[in-house]
Length: 166
Image 1 (cartoon, one colour):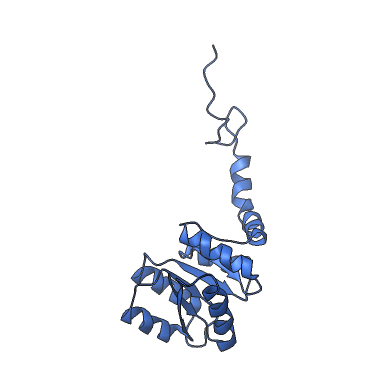
Image 2: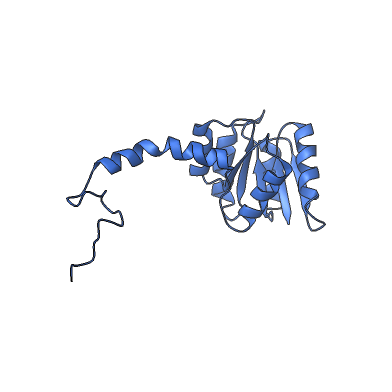
C-alpha cells in the first residue's frame, strides 16, 4: 500500500509515518509539507492507495486542495487529519469527498481503524464525530418528521406504506 501524507509540520509527518509504517512491511509512505509539494508528488506518480491531508497548510487552503485532489484523482481516497474538530469542518470535508476525518488527537488504534475502514471502501468518522454529525443534521430531520402523512408517519417512512388489510 502506498500512502501520501500532507502536513506542514515535520513532527506530525514523522509521527504519522511511524504509525502507518508500523502497520506492516507492505506499506510505503511518502510525506510532503504542503499543497504545492503534494500536487507535484501526485503529478510525478499518481499511484497512491490513500492520502492523508491536513486542512491547515501554510501554502494553501486544505479544503481547496481537497477539492483539487478529488477532481484530479477521483480514485484515490482522501482522509482528512486535522487539529480542528469543528462540526462544520467535518461536514464540509465529507461533503467535498473526503472518505474520513481523523482528529490529530486520535490514538494509534483510531488511525489504524480509519486506514482499514477507508481501504475497505468505507467512510471513517470516530464515534464522537458521528454523534456531532447526527446532532448537526437533526434540524432537517426534525422538519421532515413534522410533515406527517395522513397515517401519522413522515412521508417515505417504512410505516407509511402499509400492507393491505386482509
